[in-house]
Image 1 (tube, one colour):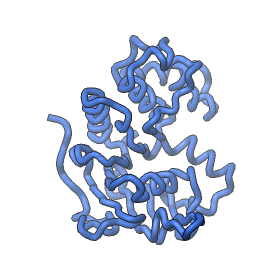
Image 2: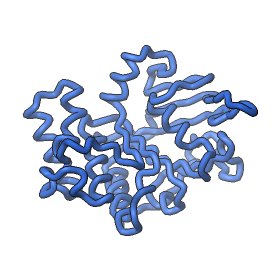
Image 3: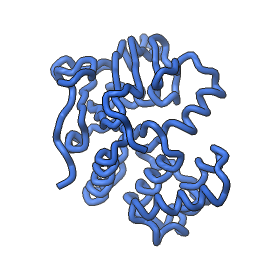
Image 4: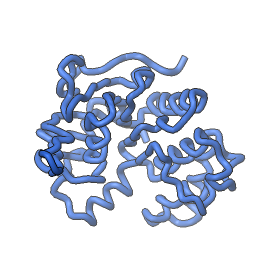
Length: 248
């Protein structure tokens, strides 16, 4: 699915997420303003505990903000019912996680098919789409294998294919190479670079600076907020992007 550049897919204003804990209040996300343009790749970087994964979960509707506004295209997400939010996640957002989140008892093919079946695609359509995506990520010959028979890099490529199966408007990736060795990391980063070239909209959380090579926009987080020293406090506008490419 190709995005239309400069059309805003995700927009956050004053986004906050707070947790009450013994010893004080934790401000995991603290007043974030953010625009994510269609067809762009946004990288969110920062040390462990800075709030970047919490921010990604808020953007994807996996968690609800304590305060602020969140829009998906022109739709107010933070006010949706649980049912409407689940439908939005299923049909419009693709997720890629550090721990892959594949079902161990299903083959690679079946794992990729599952979101399409949940979205009420016919079994034939789901099967055809899953097979096509596994071919695209270089795993056509491994379609019948269980996750336990795949390497970490292969499992993450299955997870990426699964994220794409419903043709989402945006892909959210939380530390997608965190459990991979160097060779598998480069493999996955090349795949993200290819998705970027095809016009997909991606938000990728990483602590590794190599992610900058896959991004149009780069944001650094610290203590739940965007770090001032990035010069991109709200991550919007023509100056808030990097032109570094991965391909070539």
